[in-house]
Amino acid sequence: MKVLLVNPGWGKMVSRVGRRFNRAWPPLGLMIGAALLEKTGADVRIIDGRVACNWRKRLRREAKESDWIGLTSSPLDRWQCPNLEIAHFVDIARELPSDRLLIMGAHGTLFPQAMLKATGAKGVIIGEPEEKLAALCTTEDWTSIPGIVFRRGAEIARTGESSPLDLSRLPMPAFHLIKPQKYSYELLGRPFALFETSRGCPYDCSFCFKAMYGRGVRYKPIKQLMAEIECAVREHGFRYGYFMDLEFTANRNHAAAVCDELIGRKYSLRWCCQTRADAVDAALLDLMRQAGCRLIHFGVESGSPRILNEINKRINLESIERGIRLTKEAGIECACFFMLGFPGETESEMEQTIKLARKLNPSYASFHAVTPYPGTSLAKSLHPSVSTEVSEMHFPVHCAGHNPAFLDNMVRRAYLSYYLRLPYLLERLRDGNPRSWLCQLQLFLGFAR
Image 1 (cartoon, rainbow, N blue to C red):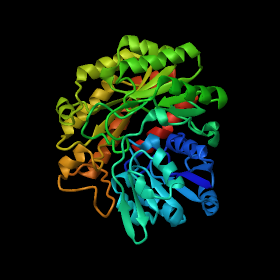
Image 2: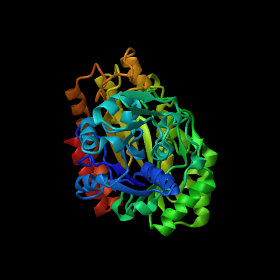
Image 3: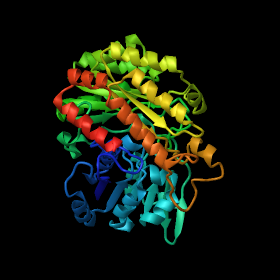
């Protein structure tokens, strides 16, 4: 059996709709699915349109020779913030043999029947795809597979809800099916790998899109995680990595255990992670630095105490400032993420956010208009009568009540006022390097124009 797994390209590094990053990061979910399929004896190939040249031509050719084609609209690194340009994905799907096509990702998870109709696919996977993908390719009776929608003759069938995936059952990702040198993160370097120590998040911020993760938080056994890192670093030459956990330090003991293992193994791996500013302390940050951490992503969101309370962030400005300060003191760079345009947010409150960004002065700051992803409590508060069981897929770019042109202008203003400060420019020239300056300039132009 031949199986082709596809991560389509989305064009420019920064999408114009919603300004989403399209970085060249490994498709970790497809690599895990490929490994599960290889255990059944399948011949699996991965086409990654984010790094491959002429990938659509190759896709059309190899699709003809494949028994099954798995196409994702959002690889694992885009589970939390999927692209909004769904028409582009549907066009790609329509070029493929529908009777052998399986769809994965956030868009089909939210709107499975609409996705099935739009793409003509045989089946759509809801939520975490890895084990379901392998089951669909190897099982004749699809009614026994929970968490899917599929065509059964002239009918559309939907199976029951699936349970959150047990991470300890996952095999070693199929690193051998990708080319490490193709993958990079401009804030760290290349070859760049993705890892995960957990899935899920214990917090319940109103804007956070977690449909792909399921309920609760699940942790990967440390021994299993270290085997994956060993394989990536020793056998495949990865030098940089990102732990894709939604909150890497939410479980402090687990994060410390990971760092202790990394320190003991003396890897040259340099890595980054994402967490909350109130979930770090001086001792843990020092341990993370020793273990190779060089960058932490912090979701700050807003500089308005009222907005932080409204979105159920459960954090105050003092805790944010303290966490960022401690991170800098530990010698770890910060990338802070801010959002503008929450329901009822005033221009003055948006200015508070921009002012906080300048006060925190992280190495990197990112500003976005708020996207009310379907299924989030934020979206439900705006449109309480709208269900994701509609016949058409709809992904709003902004929250209702805000003028899109005004929000776009505020985002642009935020970028310009942050990055064009003379003290910031001098600091980056002193501490950075020419390669990072060029990459940062490209990103700045992609967002600020």
